[in-house]
Image (cartoon, one colour):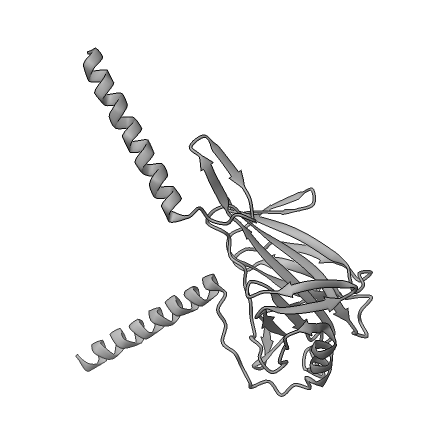
Length: 260
């Protein structure tokens, strides 16, 4: 009896851990960590020189990030190369991958330099659009750095040491490569280390990922438009539209009965 209970407890713990892992994966939640013995002085200096309003603490990072498939509308990811100081800069490439599948989309090759940009769109029907290319996704997406056929994933680690540090916006304003950007809570800065057991300065490649969720806007029963500026329809508007629709149906039924 004791062994049976113990087995059930182990099963419950195992399935709970699977559920929690799935939730964190879907929501893109990752815990902040202070366990990395990293030399973050260069990141401190870069953030000091890059933020024109607000501050970014190089010690306040996460070790992973994911962007999910939107339920409605589409998600735009605008990626900017902020910095590349690696000795392997001319060999390093950067891209996006499907965390649940085997799809890899290269965004920058070794010829890319700071200031270069790339944009992708993820639709609610699990399609990723990049230029003239289209890919079918199975799950959330994240990013990788690649060199000589080897990939370093944004959510990867070696002996407990992350391959990248991820920073989430808190309303700061950034200025890099002659362009100013608002660093919002939906945006990320990903700082890569491009070697296993490297110097852990995480300034080999840094990218800014601007995330914009575009929702469908219902302006009338027969007119569906996409607009990022207006956002999701207000509940009062949807309720009013529903009432009007119901009244219309009731009126038609009443007249139909009179004619009959």
